[in-house]
Amino acid sequence: MQPKLRWVVLLGAAIMVAAAPYARPVLATPASGGFVSTTLAVGRFGDIHVFNHLVPPDFWNSGQNSDVWHSFQKTKGASDVYVQSNVFPPGASSGWHTHPGHSLIIVAAGTVTAYDGDDAECSPHVYTRGMGFVDPGGDHVHNIRNEDAVEARTVVVQLIPADAGRRIDAADPGNCAF
Image (cartoon, rainbow, N blue to C red; front, side, top):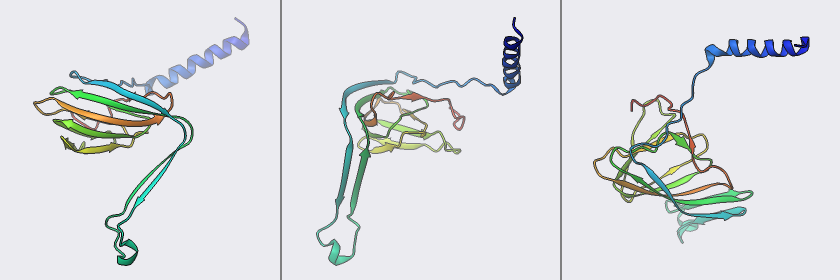
């Protein structure tokens, strides 16, 4: 072996040995308990620039803004919009995961409980039929579970960058006992 190559091999081996005590497996937590997610529709959009602002007719005269509603959405480049149907049999879990964009989640049947990966208290957020909630996506790791005795269903609308993976499995953050 040439002296230069020998040094490269030795240096690589030394780095591996030095890093070994700090290495730990990162295990994704896939869905469990029969959780099934089905894509109902997907559409490709170009740049999105939406701004809505609704105020009551007497807003300027009354000084009250209790009815003001804002909606902003702006993207640059292509986006994919997914409509998903999720089925959670009793005891099912989505597993810890995130998405590259945000999701609007509507509970269509039953009850789901959402947990946030960065919540040290592992506080349950319970949503029942007819309720909706937002998953901001990005680095927001979460797990949605059916902790009830009857099937739960959600319908989800997701906006993500075009061709991005819709779901990103994440390691168990270790904040919940389940």
